[in-house]
Length: 304
Image: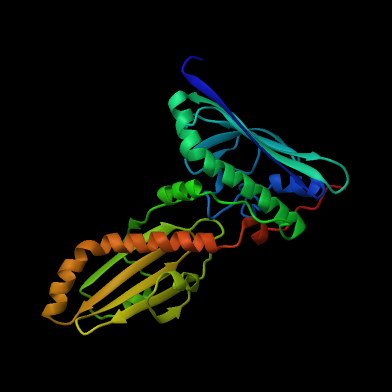
């Protein structure tokens, strides 16, 4: 078709493990114990039902549908008109003899010339990194550790990762933030920002302590409270982690006219700083999380 380009991108790796063990990992894609997809650094693969022909889903803004699935050997996903183009991508596991196999990923998409140029510039470095980290996770899961250095994350891929990272949204101060509610009888200011937890991110609020540099003021259940006191105001921040999100809530108590004048200025930039702090902490915690292949290394038992 005039004005279109066809992109074909191929990755493969020899794994020193039986094809049955590596193939079993394919069948766990998009499940709670998915050992392959490199979350939480990159968007998780999500399907609307267990892996089977007809299941719809994708990762990030890329949408696709399961078009073919041979358990333990291959799975193919066809694009569903999300703007990437028309085509497919697939994973295959090929036996190469006892205790040895090849895992491969092929992407083939026909797209406009403009989208092709954008893919090559911005998306391909991310795609290539994600696929190589999928292969790393496969080896971690079946071998227990990587027999070589992990896949490198190019600067361009990390830049795109930073630009597209999920952003917090404003919410009411959660009722479950009991430490924060009990900090001040009548706070002069409160706000709260929430961001979704990605698969593999820790549910313990203390995991967020080292990326939010304030003094710890207490911890209870799934809430950690931080804060600082000064002569003109007292500040408290609550980190509350639930099943699917983390919330950063703030309370401020003002002491005197100087505190009110000071906070009248700070209040204008506080929402930006709170959102920025939470988003940066969220990304740092994600990058510090254990790789999926280590978290979910329980490989399926090969068929007899």
